[in-house]
Length: 414
Image (tube, rainbow, N blue to C red; front, side, top):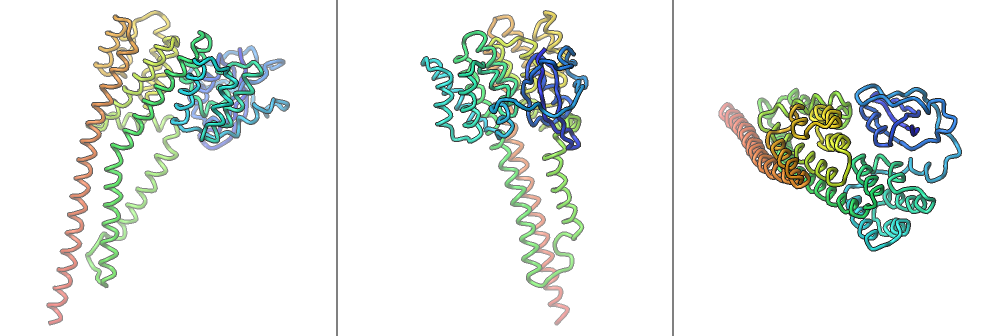
């Protein structure tokens, strides 16, 4: 079984180096992610003379078998050591790369030359470095998917699976175009979510500025006493902002915390349906693309579950992969997980019966994108109006308190 070397950071921030065994790099990456470790570097190691070469990989859900931790071996080729220093790459740049790479392969251009040409055209420094190294890797006889495996922080397991399937089946150019389509839709969905949540974010920010500005103006008039929020309220507000930043920035990196948060969001009356819809849309896009690419059904299920963006739903979906290997129907197996909506299951049954699962999953994604967009827009408008009314009431209170105190003091003076 292949041996992989890794560098990772655990949930407490402690660095780790070691070796793991697995059928492929994406399987090992999923093992480390299941343990809650943040992968810094992951690459194939030399298994010659390795005392751990015959030890099997533990199944997902169990603790990854980190049998030995040791420094990385010296003497590795330069292109492997350089992989540690390449930064992340935006999805937009990856989508453009896969589109152009597929077009060049269809035109009969040698992969090594295509990598070199696209590296010179890329505006992403990280991707440029990767493509130059990929050109050298292909010249030395390595496969495209083998080269991509050395950059798990750039190429996701879904991308690697589609590239490997296309490479083994002789239709890599077609797979690259499918990947470009998938990435484009994923980027559009992410931008859609950002747009629909931008309005309430701006309203909340403007509300805080208005309240603070009003208090500063009143204080500059030399008036106090019952005007503006007490100091304790402002300290509480600031503490909540800081706590929220820490929670969303750092705490959600923990798998257990993320799962609990996702379960909480799904239980909310309105926002739960929105989150569910976007997760079904992401799953549908990924599952349809993997199905159409010829990726094995159980593996496609796991990768699509990873792509749904919801840890609570992902954990429910994963057991279905093992049951699909036994030959059970897709829709019936997914129904037993309790993670899928009735509409998604009905579309799956139709796709399974007619043989066009990819089209059905695309329709599922389109339906939930439209529905979730409408609900997100309505929720954003409602939240914006609520914030404006709250700010208006607060400002009115301040103004009334100011003039009441002002004229009351003036009457007392007379």
